[in-house]
Length: 539
Picture 1 (cartoon, rainbow, N blue to C red):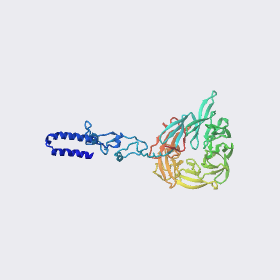
Picture 2: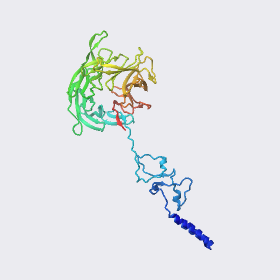
Picture 3: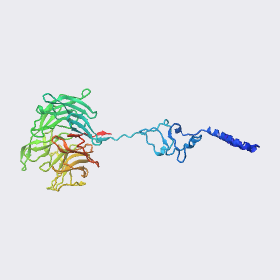
Picture 4: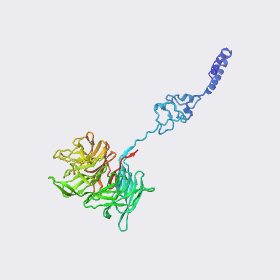
């Protein structure tokens, strides 16, 4: 084609140089030459980018500095289409959620046809799983669930009188109100809620009131007290037969004879779900589930030594019972019937022995709080003593059954220096540490309040490696109970608790810079029976 055009350009020149009438035919030849060149150029192929032919451009705007012609001429497409797309050119392509985003530099290159080749798809990163503990509680006989990370509050089940959760938090036993008969007897249903599938299963119906109803840690047994039947203690197995669980016939493993306040209101499951502990006017009892038997572990009369070293038998009342996480031992408070002092002790459920925990005697104005560690060790929190200038402290004990003393002191943590320091009302103020809970393997959280009439509580973090104590926050109320979230997210603080167990003041204090949350209005009327579930995976 290039040779043909060259011949056309040279032909008129030769013709004009040799023809005698060139002056007359020159104008006509010029017109003919122009028409011939135009026809030849229009036959030339225009090299458009492939994306334009494929419809990959939706807006062919005029480059900056050029005016758009009113009508498109023969050369308009070739003239206005830039070889490199300008920055303001809009490209239309399908957006894939998992495709790597295109940078500005890449967007200036011609886009290949979407059909060939296939775009390289980058894998979507797997979302990180967050371990979150849900809070369960009752409000107006409704079982409620609250997520402290999102603020979500929802109702799970209606008509719930009491509930109990297994150690994993998956199985939740529910005692639900059914009806009142014509002769005035109130009947109940016993249900099981699968917290993973949210399936509600009816285990038994038309039952009398079941007191102290509790599910075993493994979720396979339910124990309760029948007050109308001489305080019989019964157990029933949750059997997985067929498509849904059923409840076996109940078996009576013992009875409870209350005499003082606080007796026959607690059934404590052993960690292996094989035994039950309870206390009554006769002492501490142990029931073996698989043998359907019970026996008296310790009578309500113990031997004590007077200041002169003389032994005597004293009638006592045993307080609440708490199993060691590794079994065998239980923690209890001993309250003599005719004395103004009380102390903490360990109960060996195998040997039927009792051992006083050192330095746990409580007199008026002082307080000692003991709690279990995750490995069966003991944490003993002592209040300050203005008379001796002793600061509040925490002692860590290891329980060794083969040792004559049962316990060996591991370390002592004084709470004298707190950063930043919290204000106190007076130098004579008694500071009492309480509500210890492990945050992780190296950190404990606790509350420090100023005696029984204290008007504030310090939320503290204790570093077990170096003993450093830091202030997490101040609670502007006389807290009566602090429940630390097992996921380490914060603390539920309850104050002004009524006789029915409902707090008049309830806040959640997140660990961090977030502000405390007032839950009094959010949780509805008379919330009670708060339980943190173990941390579960959440996206």
